[in-house]
Structure formats: C-alpha cells, structure tokens
Image (tube, rainbow, N blue to C red; front, side):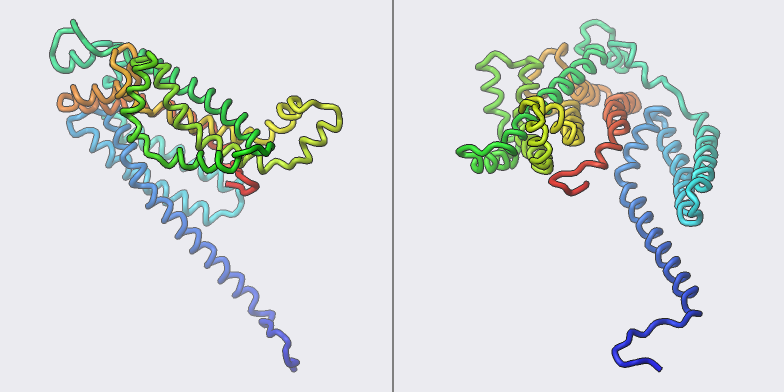
Length: 357
C-alpha cells in the first residue's frame, strides 16, 4: 500500500526496459549530433577538398572526377566511423577498428584516385617565370618574383606581427587587470570602439600616413599597420585571462621574497600561456592572410607576399591553367593547417575569465 505523498517508483522488472530506453535515446542523440556536424562541415570542407584534388590532378575534368571519387570513399568511411563510435563502448577496441577503417580508406583512395594524381602543378616551386611559361611568353621581363620570396615576406610579416602583438598585449593586459589608474574605464571602452571600426575605412588615411613617414612600400609599414589594428582586441582578451588569475598567487610569491617582476614572469605568465598561444596563433594567421593592406601599401615585386602572388597569378593565368592556381592555393594554406594542427590541443582548452572554451 502506497502512502500519500510517497513518490511512485517503477517496479523492479521495469529497470532493464528503462536502461534500454535510455541507451536508445543516447544513441539517437549521438547520431543526430554527428549528422549535424558532418552536414554542417560539408560546405566548408568540400571547397578545400576540391582545391586539393584539382592541384594534384589537373584541369581537364580530372579534378572534378577525383573530387567525386574522394567523396564517394570518404562519406561511407565517415558513416562507418560514426557506427563504430556508437556500437563500441570499449575505447581500446573501438580504436583498433578505427585504425583499420582508416587504413582501408587510405588504401581505397590510393587505388581509386592514384592514376589521376601527379605533382606537375607544383612546378612553380622551382620555376620563377612560371606565369610567362603558362601564357607561352618568353621568360624575359617577368614581373613575378620567386614564390619563395613571397613566402619569406609573408612569413616575416606574420612572425614579426605575432611577436609584437603577443608582447604588447600581454604587458598591457596585465597592467589593465592589476592596476587602477585614471581613465582606465574609458581606455577599456576605447579598445572596444577601436575594434568596432571596419579596417576598410582607414585605407586612405593609413596610405597617406605611411607615405608621410617614409614607410610606404615597405614590409615594416605593413607590419606596424596590422599590429595597430590587431592590438585593441588582443589587449582586451589578455586582460580577461589575467582577471581569471587570483591575486593570491602573485601576492604569495611576493610575500616569499619575489619581486613583482619575478612574480609576473614565474607565477603569472604560466597561468595565461594558453591565452598568449591563442593570441599568437590568431595574430600569425592575420598577418599570413593579410591582403587589403599589402595590396594598398606594397608595389615592388620583391615585397610581394603570398596573398599578392596568388592574386596576380590568378589574374594572369586563371584562364590558362587554374590547376596551377589551385596548387599555389594549397601551398598558401599549408602553414595555417600545420599551425592549427600543432596548437589545436591548447586552443580547445582555452579559458577566459574562468570559463573554459
């Protein structure tokens, strides 16, 4: 007999049914989430996959053929990986099956798409006047520098900008977080306002300013401009990281005899290293992919970056051989892919203000 107010509990024989229902519901939610992720990523992944397949195959219809063959192999492999994730709860056993699936997929890709693939489109890596050759012109008077010159310029801009942005934003974020001074609130509001302005509206003033100070058509001018535009947001983000570090850590170090500088470098910086890494990655990518200001401020081909090289190559030879342009695009995107692959573990653990991202 059940007393009034007592919560009704299922009979003992109902527990297996409830467990089975919960398992089915969990698997249905997992299937739905994976399906949404796969379908949502297709519009982003397919263009890059097309770029890669065209670069390795050519322009005479082979690129599209390789793309469809690749998708015909990868899509069932993704579905099989989803089934493995749901079917096997034992992580070690599931990993063995996933490795076997990956090996079978790679073998199938090599067997099906192998006859179409070649590296002829990457000959721009060792031929300087590749644009003239594609247009059937002589190699004299080529306005194109070596692709390695453009690569070195882009790398110099990206690395220098990364170092400057990380250094300045770290110091400024620390002082904004730890010290109270007159105008601090207005300064923080100003950082947000500066970041809100579209950079396109500043092209003419920046062009005139760099001309007046003698930095027009120099890599230094581009670096200073991009750093100035990136710093407001970077400082604001680093302030959030420093705000998440308790005062007690710093104060305990100073009580034990450390100076403020020693406490900063030895106790505080290790706590915000993920934030510094995130700011550094985003600053590097911003400098690496910069086009608007390098197109406006740089003229000599010896100062070209990879974005300018790809743009002018696209203008000159797109109608002749878009496979070559696709190969340049693959070469252009490789540093970003490598950087993200190395740093993704730390970026996914990023936390701001105590909230893990």
